[in-house]
Length: 397
Length: 121
Ligand code: FES
Ligand SMILES: [Fe+2]
Image 1 (cartoon, chains in turn red, orange):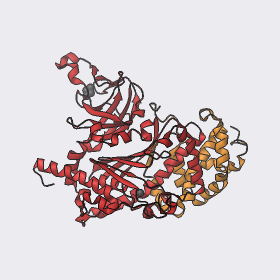
Image 2 (cartoon, chains in turn brown, green):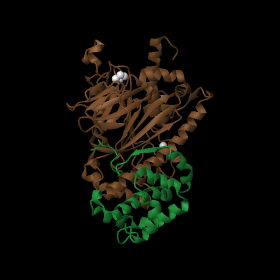
Image 3 (cartoon, chains in turn orange, green):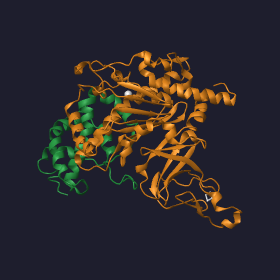
């Protein structure tokens, strides 16, 4: 048995050299022209996470999701037939946004302007004086956007020629189905807007190099011993997606109240079988902008939506099975949310500072070390799409 | 409402903290953490953290949905205590500088809040 104090084996840099070792062009993180290519080649062509099935349990349930990168508002609804669909939230008469509410349940959606009325399946049901239009009702259905589900997570794709979601997710589809989020019936959520590029923001959450400096107190339990940086135990790559297994600190420095709070949450997650799931130490990063963490006592997703080259919106959700069954569960869930929010607020401070530094164009390049391999992999995957798209357009990438 | 004993028996030591920390709503509790003084947080943490186990044990014997007002207040106090414990026990001297960033992360929804969404199951 290796003794607990020497449990960590650093991944040899040579194993990651296939990703490249050179500097990374800084303009990919601040240039509006690069962002426009990304928007077209990455965000309008990828499966983008937008919702979870637990938000739409019954026919007629809907959520509205505004996606800045597509300048689109989407209406995601469960039809009378039980099928989930996504539509542009736009009346087909003259384009008025159909739904203002963020979520709700109703069997019909009526445009306030001239009262065109649609079913939850998007079909035009009725329209005043419709005979005067010389139109067929079926031609006036709400415009569809592809929507597919894996592990409870709902994704949309604006590309009509997109491959099916499961093909896109590749080998990690099965892992996603074994995350606590796949069993979730509810969630807590916080969100933020940040003056920073989406990759700069997302990259912060896929490297551990900063943990000891930025989270010396809030993240103290994940660093220490022979792994002072809290580097991952393993890394993996599959197509554009990537994963890391979070290192298990054999002697985490938990404070007494912190320990008591965690213990209070354990019985419920044990009873739900979440402690037996195989990927409880894993972080799954789905290209381009979603990652999911399997930690049973703090299972969460984080999605970073781009707004512009230097502005993004982050959404963090803690996924739970069942409503708060008792006081201990309620307490542990709220503590888990507040603790995660403490860590993330330290991150966003540093991310905005990074964008401020890059904005002037003073740097031609930035640098990733081998333990920032996931950041490099994201850049590689984005850049290959941006370069190909620029070539197709005859533009300079 | 019985002003003389707003908390269940055995928890009267927490009466002085009810006005500041007996707040319903996760976002309101988080906001009070930021709005409060370090002295107020430390006093609450010192008085309430030894009672956490007893309070949760008392509450776990009861149905959350039908808690009487005194029980609800005790629940809210313990939920606030979680936020305060993060400030006092974990963040310590870092609490002040991170508070401004933390408030930028808006709490949109929490399982502890009732009637958060007509569609949540
Ligand atoms: S624009 Fe919607 S009914 Fe006319
Ligand atoms: Fe961080």
